[in-house]
Image 1: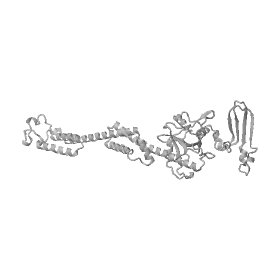
Image 2: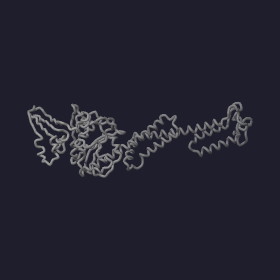
Image 3: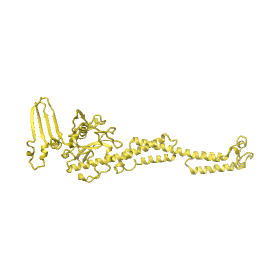
Image 4: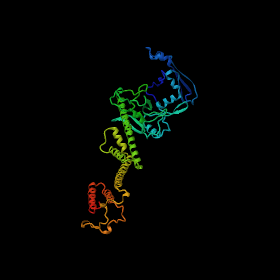
Length: 447
């Protein structure tokens, strides 16, 4: 059910001195036992010897009575070689099982239901409850990941694999038995290491396309499940058996990797853009001590950010992914609202600064109270009416008694201030009106 070439029984050839397999069939009433002396075979394997001669007298098959209700198979590796002693470490064995064998997905994984349902649709997909020291071992994945996404790899009508992946907003941190990046699986058995075929140069696989920045694959976790029955792993399951179709599949896998790298690089830039929005929001929420140049810079930054979502769709994958992220409705609405708020805030700040400058100018020109009234030529008492060109009623004249502190220059500045506010933005009109008002004051000899 799980093998590829029917030679899995020899997998322990170099691992142990003897292999013993015991199996029963329900309703049979017998237990069958196969024992192979690997140690002796290994001593003669390099000799020029017939395979039958090599194996004869080095294995035996036995049968004895057993309850008909028995139904099991036990495989025992006896006399482990030194380099395989790690298999006696329970935690190491759990790690090997969880990452390489077709065990079930951890039911505690937040996306287990959706992921398992989709994977079971793959023809030939298989999984089994696998136990180590009495406890079931699961495929385990990191927490706090986005919902799984699926992609079919194919060229024209030739399908190679189904890929699934969950992503994070940054490089994923893993715990024991977890991994990041992508595993290649055939019938749910892992083939090769994590991230197989992610090298920058593909020439070792007989292909020419390049791959960039593979570290960004660590922002994702998932698997590439081979769906084409003609693509099989090599004997030790360290890679695919290289033929023309497998090479085309590897090209498609590397293209899938390149898309995920583009996603991650775009997301990295998008994280920076979100910080720009957060900084602008902080300014809008509390603008009291924010200088006008900072507001102006933030407004320019958000305007440039909005520009990335406009115009022709870029050909570059990273820029295209970034544009998609920045065009999301919630981001778009938030950005537009902040641009409006910053614009209004900038106008208010500019207006306040103008008023502050005018007030400072008034204070600088205001006479000290100790000096009394302004110069004689600035007073209007005792002169009565002026000439025909500017008659003023007597009751309109400021009295010496009520306006001893009257200052025509201050009055003129206040009038200029009102004009600037009312005609804000029309500098030419402000200049003309202020000049005419100045003439009136001089005509009445107020200044």
